[in-house]
Image (cartoon, rainbow, N blue to C red; front, side, top):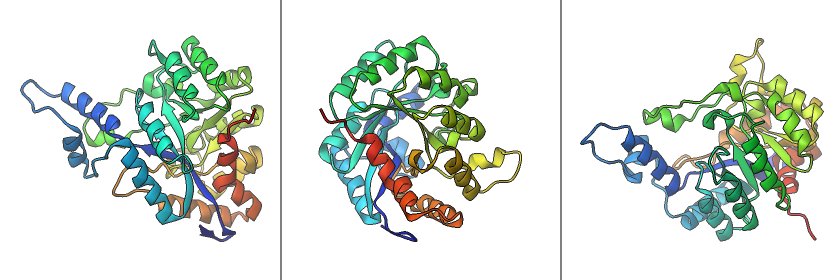
Length: 315
């Protein structure tokens, strides 16, 4: 992809793979909240309410995403199974296009089979990273059940752990009138400090620069060399800062503390027909250009760091 630094090999660290399983889960929740006698929701009725395209089966959706990435000149993407229990959808997508995708999957550690699901998923060889959403599922990252999940992940070769911190909103839930009973008490990146130290061989990814806990995310990165920041989304959390800041300012601070080797470009792309969120890429290119980042560091941030993080160790 062309950029101010020349040709870039771009890899996106944050793309939600909204499979039929994802929409089936939403349809079930919407139906459960409807009154007696209401028509049962389906995948098609849910996407119609949203004005989105209904997803095909996972292997076909993988081909759709591969075509979309080709259209924008994106080399690879990390696909996130965005509801617990949907890891097979992303595993199927990675299997269909192994040279294009890395597999991430959401886990709820409070589920009784969580650790076993992680062991099984990692052992399959197609999934690279587990995703934890403490505020969404209402648990502390220091909970004993989380430790069991992390031990299962650490037993796999080169596994990483994505931990959502800060402000959490799921726009699709609001559009469908579904409640979001999240608990921000469990959102502070500082809570991850002791955990990251206890698992030094695991690499932890904090998306959206900490989503409002930017200072805390930087402190965590400074203390824990196995913590990375993902740059994805519109980063509207900047509205909450006590002083007005820009994305360029955020990048400058992140580079000062975490360095260029621990920043992972991402968009937070998700649904069709929008597809890959090119405007996010353009905003980040502009911000990094404003602070004069070098070509070498731009190549790291926009692709090489993710490639290195997801590389399986060789025996």
